[in-house]
Structures are given as structure tokens and as C-alpha cells.
Length: 300
Image (cartoon, rainbow, N blue to C red; front, side):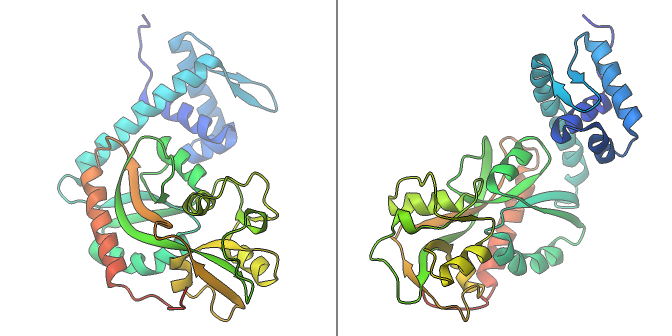
């Protein structure tokens, strides 16, 4: 048994290096010099008696033991952060920093409706927003790089708890006068891998997973340009239409099956010490959405 236990600071160094896979970037995240971070990890390896990171001049690689070790280190770091957050917010909830992720197919349509009410309700909350695909955001949540996440379900985000904010129906959008009677997998234009909207639409329509779409894009706005140009059809969330995304466009929309919808939720890691805070935040988000007025009401 080693005479000394690793320090929390050393474990934070290792977790940051795992997230960034680069000593310089990890040092910047931790607010220290690269030599300080490198020395801290070397001392950690000396304490535990195993090599965790193999280094070369141009790259680094976690060893097999290092991968297992950093997963456990991340759990300890997350637990320490949650303990600190629990103590700091016990007297007053939703104060201090909150790292909130949000997916791109929700962010531009939901944020204008919720940011002002949240600032009013929780003036001491310091919100750090990060827009990411569902895949990247769920990874960041599980690694402790995000505290909570606004996500669209169903989606496998690992061990999470969640509270619903709203239900968002999906429609099929096609060039003006070219709506098909049923969705055609061959004409579908999809978002790039990592966006959950593709899966929601395909599942709702009973369409098999499209392995090779005719075209893919990184945003709904780009897909709309392609649809209007007559290049195919796409799935579109109702909240995007309500926000006016199709205003003035030569695009028709068609309702899908009654169950074709996304569940927009606030999600957090299962067992988080801040679950009561997040439930309070979710209630405020629901209120903000229900009290808000959509920017447009084009029929689907």
C-alpha cells in the first residue's frame, strides 16, 4: 500500500488531460503552466506506482491502467465538486456557476424564451452555456464537464435523471408543392452524426435508419436551404417553425404520426447532489415556456 494518497489537485490534472488529450490545453483549463501540470501527473504516477500516460514529443496516450484509473479519478472529482456545490447552495439554491449544455436543434428556439425569466428568478446564478450535439453533450455531462443539459429524448445519454420542459412535435418539410404522401428515406436530408433529431424522425415514421443520406448538414438552417432548392425533404421540429424559421420560404410541411415528437428535458447525472436544484430549474423552465409567446404561428 502506498504511503501517500493522490491529492484532489493531481486527480483534477489527470481528468483535464483526459478531456483535452493535450498537455498545453489541459494546463490552460486548470489555470497552471504546462510544466506544473506535467510534474503533477508525474508525481501522481510515482505515488501510485504505475505509468498512467505514455508521452512522446508529439502525442500522448493513456495506458490501459491509465484509462481505468482516470475513470475512477473522474468519479472522485465529480463527487468532490458536488459536495462543494451542495454546501454552497444549501442556504440558497441556484447560486454561483452552472455549466449548462444545450443541443443545437433546441438552443436557438428555446433560449430566447427562457434566458430572461431565469435571470430574473435566479439573479445570483452564473450561467455558462455550451451548445453541443447530443453525443458530445452527453459525454461532457458524464465526464463532469457539464452540470446539466437541455436534451431531446429519446436518446441514450447514460445514467441520467431528468425533468420534462415541453413536448415538441415533428413535421416533414418538403419543397413547395412536392410533399410526398409518406416520408421517403431516399429523399431525406439529415443532420450530421451526433444529432438526435435524425433518430427521432426516423423512429416516429417507422423508417429504417438511413445509413447514407443523400446530403448531410450541421444545422437546420442549412437543411432548409437544401429543401427549398428542391434537393429533398427533412424532419423539422415544431419549435423551429414557431420561431419563424420557415417564414417566407417556399416550403410545405406535413404533420407526422401523433406520436412523432421530441421530449425536451433538463437532464443531470443520476445521483447528483444538486438534483433538487435542477428540479427547481426545470419547473422555472416549464413556466417560462408556457408563459412565452411563439415568434410565429405558421401552420404545419
